[in-house]
Image (cartoon, rainbow, N blue to C red; front, top):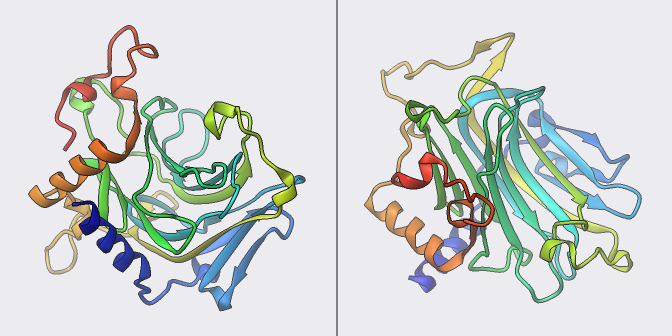
Length: 284
């Protein structure tokens, strides 16, 4: 199974579809020149030095969709750095769906940190180590978000599913449009081994690379969504009804059994009062 998933990851990571142009989809929002659109819009790089990190966001906001990004993470000693790809709404009681990549010392694996916020409440972290070196080549990271569930995928391999449990009184992000955000910043007070390993600025500037930004979703403008529940032929888009089949369930079980390093649903010390209801239900 390990070699099979690695082969899939290599193949998926090497695929370059018709690349969406960053000039059309995104805007660099901070970093004073540390963020750069490259290759005529096919790529984008973010850099971090001791003075500042950098970041960009999508020009549009969306209410549900599939969001794909290829990343090549900071190589070498990346301790203290955090590279992100996430969705978020704005304001008090915001919603958020996170991919965060926590750097580490040379030779130690990145930590892939995932979380879901709804109405300002998070505390739903799961963390993983990957089965490949995410600094050696581009790999595809995907968020699928619909009214029923959120699925996190790496090279189209599901690593986490977060289902809608509103029927049990648990808020689910489904009413606040969100933009896509990406950033590279310093968080050495907590990011690497709980903050024990600090950023070594002699390795700066740190640089992460993004490409093949793809969005298939419902853009929201002035409160109106760009898409209906079905297309003109009466068929829902694949992401609107996305759920795991037997093969997908086997893959996510394998990833979680072999590569998960933290699960909020198993942290008795942190949640002595008991786990949230979704922890007691089927993960898939």
